Length: 591
Image (cartoon, rainbow, N blue to C red; front, side):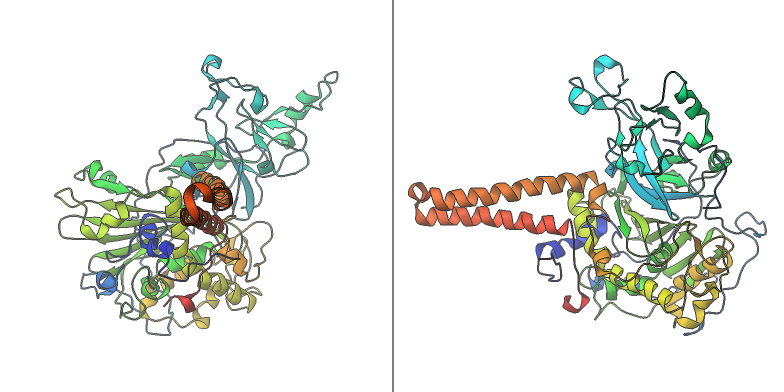
């Protein structure tokens, strides 16, 4: 039996507003969307290396929401499109620094966000995909006891000395292929000596991707030394670093990747107090990250979040109302399309900014006392039809250091796993549309952004110029129009995935799958899942014991009531366990 959150009277859906605010999309109670163009300097917390192998081919309520949809009277450059017309947006030659922009965006020579490291178990390897390349993400910290002075050894877990703990290490990103026989390293183990072990033949690799142990190597011929000298023995290491709590991975691992990555800023949003020294860091609130492997492409994620018009309709009963919240929108251009992105104004107090390749900042002023609300969103291309999503909310208190009443809900101390679980309700409302939209347009030959470097953008599946005649945009779709213009004129028209570039078929199982898209790689949700399974089992057993064996002591009524209560706890735990695996949603049933 599948779990469902269609009934808004259920506790989960009633709490979804809080989850929405603190996770994937934050609150839209305060008007708008936005983004900052100044890239954050890459404060290196963690760094990875690159292989020396030859480079592969470039790899709320409607009343509160109403300001979001109000007309803007702010002075701005506007390039409006008539309904049904997608005439290319007027380009402005000079960029920020007054230089003419002739360059194109390179998907492989930039930093891509992958996941919040806080949610990863550093004692295990994790599988991710970026631009069609399977990666294994792991932490090379030693697991050692105090008497070992921070140096662990290669041993079984049961042989660890007492007090051994996982020490801070560096997060690494390798191609998910063992150099030996190309089996997945993500099915391996992180050993106590800080090496990554391939579980097939027990070869071990250090954080730089160098092989350090081959158990089968012959000592008499010094075979291990010969293996180490062979360039093929090295793992395909990608530059990686942690900035702002997110793991960022460089799009290429060729011989110049390390140098190029160090010379390139990570496009992480600066927090308000980092941009404005008059803001006290204590007045800035950041909610926990939400993340998920979404069942639609990176470009469709960006298209969706720069589209404020869909919010009250698609997110009915969570953020606004399809009956009273859908109103005319007057959207203007704040910053024209360049290779770095663009920005739009959605109301007097709200803006939305896209920074290439995958950052959108949705910013709104909450009151005239300095309070602001920002939704900080990130995405990176995974494989065709999927993307890696991360997001959180940033709130600035009013000048009197209080949180505005409308934002207090979003600062409640809700467990992270609950926020993640409920946030998926919000995400699934859009996923139903975007998943099928992308696959249908690709299947019918209308439009596709799946391709590689050098591909003909007017290929068999439709190219970058094919979006215009195959949709019916109106003035409220300005953000979508500008993003598709960026894709066409600045980003080559397609996302150059490596490997299999075919679009997967429509699958509701993919849309509603929570376990594989989030739970299995989130330590908070994984821990909650294990505890809930124990609670479910214990509750059912206790209910049976009380109901069958204890009526003499508790009486028939007492034992029945207690057994029913225990059984109820088990049923609730069972429902949440199912939701951590699969969460269904139906707009037809969401009245």
